[in-house]
Image 1 (cartoon, rainbow, N blue to C red):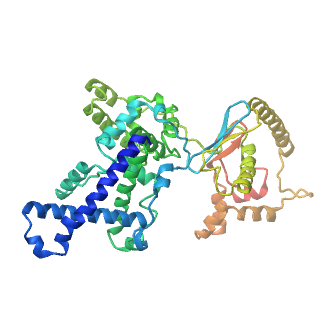
Image 2 (image 1 turned 180 degrees about the horizontal axis):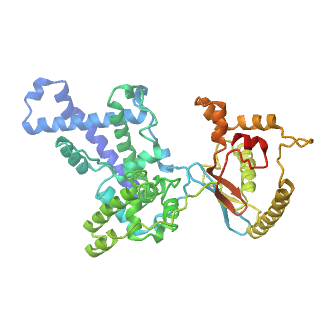
Image 3 (image 1 turned 90 degrees about the vertical axis):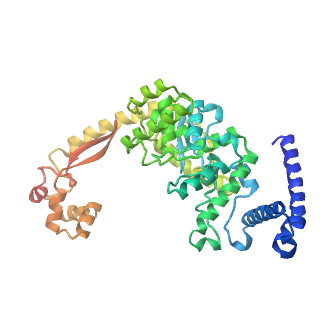
Length: 458
């Protein structure tokens, strides 16, 4: 924060304190305790008295919320917590030659700066979510008034600002408890909303508008294991946030209303309809022309979708063992200060990706050779064959009865004979292959005509 800002803040606080003292003596006291004196006041003084009393109630309520007075209201994020504005971040593992090997995370999020985001995406966000973003200090009273007016007409709509939504995302104001008063029907919603307002004002004090926009886009959930704009841009369009096209900006901003319902993978029709609504809003705010809106609305949504998994990348076994060692090392040396899944660490290793690629290729070649030898060895034979050439059917039956598929059918009331029959029916399944996984159709029993026992089942 700048010195000028601190100076203005102190000046405002001093004047506000003087106003409270003056009002308490001159305005509120007559209205509350001295009815005879109140009756003698002019209409203007009466109105001013009630106005001050209302402001005083709001001020005292805000202080009570901040302090969680008598544990009535539940916890509130303090100034220091708001100033840090921490979010769960993925830790990235890098090789000795500077390549990204993979990530550790509970939420796949890698924050980016304001300058790394497509400006049109930011403008679209403001146009759709908070058109008066630059005119308020976290609470848009004009929007609240309009929302109350529309609610009275039976046309309910939201009035949350981007800053309020950020407060909700960062500090879970609606799920972290509402104190003893939270059990009263309807009060928990009011308390959560009040906390969002107070926290939003705090965020506006500590962060610039640009920083708030970047924080918001870094925190939001875009579905499909993508948290934050960087992960979402890569997951759905295989791009950096700075490379997004207008129609792609519209898709992502449109998802914020309901990440599942408007997801372009799960619900492409809903996503297309929502995208076109956002394009219309972009045109109304002058972000695109009428011609652009018309052309873009006719386009289908073109995705380059690939959901990022924690197992993606080179050397999965190495990274798994590294995670175990890192957890113990961090616990021993730093206590609970760092967490490899949430602290956004940069982990540099001695592994060289060039050597790793050659190593994995060599293992793949060797395993294919071993697989051929294995197939040749067992061709025309069965693994549960006894030395005398007979089948160990008891061993095989016991093994099958331990499977989840057999147990589920048995629990559902299926007879043993019917259970074996349904296990013999080929179904589509996914199997691991050294070139990756592959879809095949085969029996869960994995039997062939070599086995007399399996033939009997058939």
